[in-house]
Structure formats: structure tokens, C-alpha cells
Image (cartoon, rainbow, N blue to C red; front, side, top):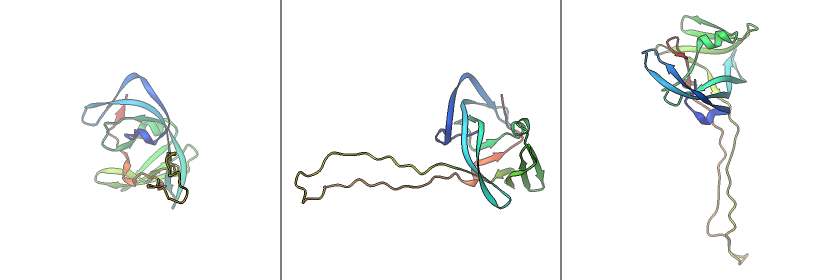
Length: 159
């Protein structure tokens, strides 16, 4: 479950009203579903991947991974003391996390391309010897999510 609409590379609004039931039995709305490109940390390196069937839930406090959904998709999630390991259906370690403040924080980042928006203005001096009175500048930056943004929590369910 993700609270950032801009992270989705493919998105479909939900046609049916869907609620996410939280651990305290309160409910918040899910607004859509789609894919998010990520980089996952396992075995000392970052690997690009795509998370599918991600619910867009803008009222979440943090992004969450559903252990039951991972298991349904053939993944295996192991909790070993303060460590959390996620294995794919081929039993390959694909994601690691660590216990922090009673939540398992997963080592994952958003994999977004470097982009820029540029406006072309046709306003300059007719005298070519005079520089324009203003300049248009842009700065390219890559965006990555904090490692604190994806959590696994057994008390969260979606319906």
C-alpha cells in the first residue's frame, strides 16, 4: 500500500469503493491500484524491480507491504529476531529489512527516472547584442524514497 500517487508508473482508479482496515479496526479508503518501480536491497546490493497490485491509499501514515499478499503471490517472508527476509517463489532472497520501533523497516527505494520540465519562451530583445533580461534554468535531480517508507506490519489487512 502506497500513499504517494506520483510514484505509480501504471495506475487505475478503483471503480468499486474499497476500504483498508487498520490494526485498530478503523477504515481508510483505497483510491486506486497499479505498479511502482523500486530498487530492493538484498545480499549487499540494490536490484531493480516492479511492485504490482499496489493499492493507492493516500490517508496512510507510511507505506506498507502486506505479508499475506506477498505469501499469496508465492513469496516467503521470514522473521529472524530483528531481521526480516523476503524470498521470491524460486527461494531467492530479494529483500531485507530490520526491526525498528516495533515495525520491520524494509530496505527499498523508489526507482524514478531523472526528469525535467522546460518551458520555451519567445521573449527576447530584438537587439541581438543585448542578453535577455531573464534566464530560464532547471536542475535535474533523481528522486528516491527514504528507506523508512516501506514497512511490514502483520496487523494491516486490505479488503
